[in-house]
Length: 239
Ligand SMILES: NC(=O)c1ccc[n+]([C@@H]2O[C@H](COP(=O)([O-])OP(=O)(O)OC[C@H]3O[C@@H](n4cnc5c(N)ncnc54)[C@H](OP(=O)(O)O)[C@@H]3O)[C@@H](O)[C@H]2O)c1
View 1: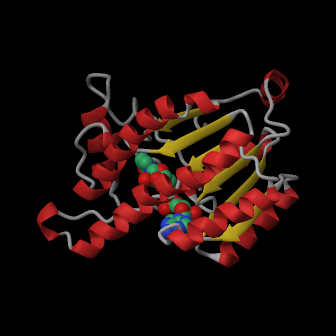
View 2: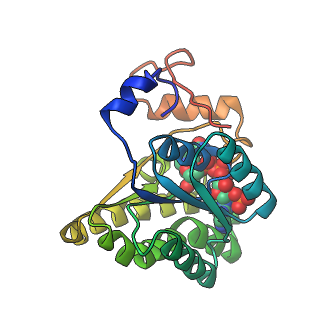
View 3: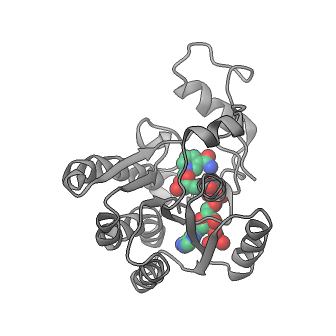
């Protein structure tokens, strides 16, 4: 994704997602929005959700103009009943089969650990981890029925190394990394691949509150290259 020039005509002839189905949570903004477009561009039929109906309809309208096959529905993934309703909708739209589940929704509140309240813990755990866990469980029969299932979790670099973005957020991403390993082994027999990606700072609404200095500091402290600087850091932007 972003930052690398790709010859689209060549890519299209090399591989395609025509005939496949995908669910991307949180597709109205940021990374989720970019994933919806990428999957749809490769020919997948995509369903996405968020909490804001007006934004969903705006995005749907734009996607229709681009010729993408994308359906939308409102879902707050922090509620188990809404997660169940989402998967019922997806099952009905895609005739009981799902090839790709992108567990993208995530949120954050950065505070010193001593200042977090129980409600912060509940919100971040429910949004970032519990929802992804439950949606994976609910999607399992659909992914299995497709005979070629794939789950991708949106983790973060902070689930691997210590980055000063908040201990709860980081713990949700660390948990997600371990869940990826478990499901990869447990569900391989069902022809379901499980992976996660761990982005660095990516310019999206979620990352917007962090200052440029803060982001550069994180990039430098987590770069594999010694002497990483602004010019050697690649900052990808998804609007
Ligand atoms: N941006 C980064 O630097 C970065 C770095 C590492 C990892 N990540 C991870 O990448 C993923 C995407 O991040 P992003 O930066 O693209 O976030 P974002 O810009 O805030 O977009 C989040 C998307 O999820 C939706 N959403 C949020 N809470 C929801 C809920 N409870 N139920 C349903 N939809 C919800 C939002 O729409 P509504 O708010 O309208 O519901 C929006 O469409 C997250 O898991 C994040 O932790 C991001």
